Length: 564
Image (cartoon, rainbow, N blue to C red; front, side):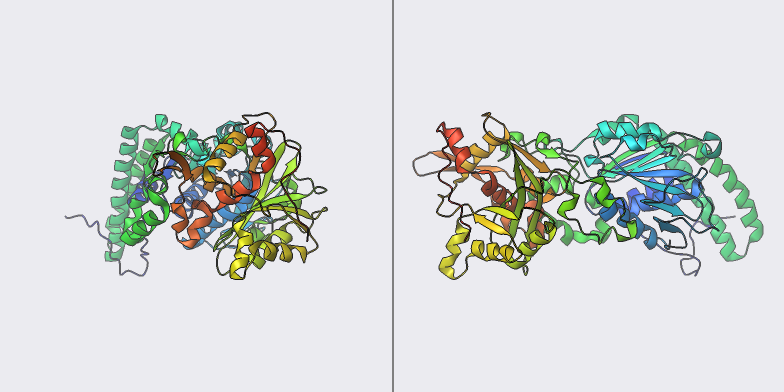
């Protein structure tokens, strides 16, 4: 008697869903530990983490699990909404299958031990409690007891902080030891780039991957899947005797499948081409044109970046220049996950700001306007946050973004450093600098224009001065500190900017900034163009620092602030 292993897809009880090949492999193997590196549009959060977490929730009812992130803000605004979107796409409904931030309905099952607070948590109908944890406060997580851990964007999760949380994977083996997922981990990310300050701990997990063991689990799962298919076919044919016989076989193979997955680590790395069936050729062509070869290699092909440090325009830029604790935890403690995507961040949330001192900003003008905002703190220039506009937004909008964010600032004084061409637009009837300054002044600020009549900063001069500052070549130069999360576009722009060497008619070579990225599609420019790096240049390339580098004494002259 032949075996029927093809289901009738016209059956109303059969639901069709698309899944990439790697997604099918992950679901079939269902390992204890999953470490997945994928290019853009591989569904790392909305597909892989979302459905795998559903499987784990089903397998360990009443368990306590944890989702770790670099900061609460990133988790609340980006990661959790993506996971919930994935759940909803796969049939789960808020209020029926899960709730956030509130005590679940009384008729639902409860976690195996009492919950102290439901703030920043997800609860499911079968008693699973998922705590949202931030690695900017790792010590507070280590004392917990969780049965599974999730993490997205693993490249920005620092291992020295993450290892403090790992001991929390423990507890209550008698209740949950039956599950392969007990004390397991699920982490996804795109390829880490050490040169950009990413942490590559996830790459080290490959040493725990046993391909033969994974292959055995996959082969067992495929047999199990065929048995399930036969059961559905027998049901569709009304052959209940055969269906009951197959169910006994299903039990035997399920046991084998569970044994084959015990303590299994699955590590895998794929490019975005794994989803070529739905992304189409045009997606890759457009993305390549937008990103350029180097960023395309890492973001899409999942290849390690080959941009050498010496090729970078800001070659002295390193992890030491970025800080991760810029937001006060108390700011978002009272914000529920349901409001996370809409809550407004203001300067009250900043940990490292002096509300009683003036602010500074750099400006780069054009169809995109970029504005990093900083504050001098002793011998430090601390870049606190960033703003930008793309058409149709322009000068009024960026002024309003700044004044709204800093509306609680006590000393409303802003020193503005900018491209001197911002004044030269007067020749065509538009003075960007004065226009933006006046919009800010309308909100009660004093704005000092710091660059009127200042000489042009050549790219070769910028290369020398900025790298001297970043490298602290002279002790009188300031230390630069940039918020890793609130200045993510500035960070990316500085890290991606490359040098080009130009030769003049006399054969002399000079260093220049590769500005080709400013031809990118508009929506790509904040993150991937040199625009933000230019506004950073105007912020820190000041005459007093140039004089320190050239060996001349700074007397406080040369910058002519204007408050008119």
